[in-house]
Length: 402
Ligand code: PMP
Ligand code: GLU
Image 1: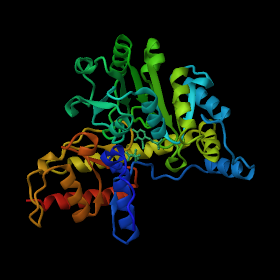
Image 2 (image 1 turned 135 degrees about the vertical axis):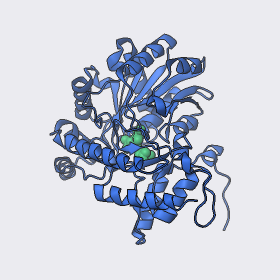
Image 3 (image 1 turned 60 degrees about the vertical axis):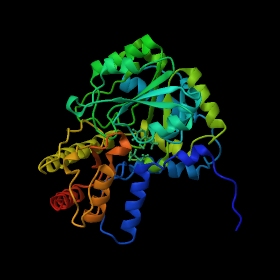
Image 4 (image 1 turned 90 degrees about the vertical axis):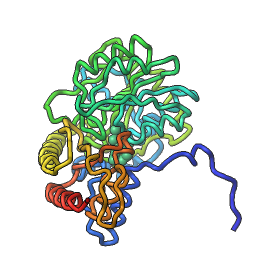
């Protein structure tokens, strides 16, 4: 067999998404008959609501199976604009909206459209695993802004200001956050918006979990709280989490027309339009009954309480209570330095997650993937019985560490 030339340096230095890799590993083990409790998956365990599935079937039957405009169908852009008006009080023209193959592709397009080699993007840690690689794939440099769990992972304006330099193009905000479930308060978001205006940088506001907030507050972002920031604000959202539609791959961007146009140009040379059938399904999701969101949110909230209660009963675990999304991010560093029954030392979050998988058959994601090696991310997007079983196993495995 002959060997082809080497692959790009870009791909050689790229690590696969650890969330998707762990979830795939957990699912494969389950398929082999191993009794895995999968707390790694970052996707709702609910089925896509029936009326949304019906809309997709209808789209197929009506032959809505061809290329659509690159940035999405007009009706869907109109529905997104209506939703932004209703939820945030924000006015967007359809020319300021682009539909993509998931929120992830929106972020990818933005990085490609925005960054020249060496340009910097400020990313508060803990961060979603894909932000730094998406920036790096565009030649950009992620600049990490540390936050403190004791302070609800809030952003220090002073620290942020100190990181903004001539190469800074943007900051990414994600609230509710993956992996911590933390929500930035209005004051913080407003002050970040004002600082961005003062310094002239973009704010990429990843609002993908905006409907999964446990405090009952209506959503807000820099664009809705600071009028002058609207032209710097790039709103990233999608239907994956809100409507249990992760596999359908529909996300969207709202922002200044120049950036939306640039992102759409990139999309035209990479993936073309997002899936036509999924666009019709997303349209039904945004324009149809919204009670499914409340039901799912209620379940996530109950699980958050019960699961974190259970974790806090384990000696050595510290865990801030999530205010949204479906993750918690406990500090488990008290177990570092201990030894497994086989005599292997637990030196960090990777070792701890490997141990939990081997010993307890519980899949979780090491905090180091999110920029904090003291922690482990557990997803509670699974039923209560599985969560209770998971807790039991975690407790018993941790008890065996000497
Ligand atoms: N942002 C965050 C913080 C996420 O957790 C996810 C989930 N994968 C995404 C964006 C992208 O989601 P999707 O591509 O499924 O729309
Ligand atoms: N966002 C989810 C997670 O963090 C889904 C997987 C991914 O795209 O990273 O687990």
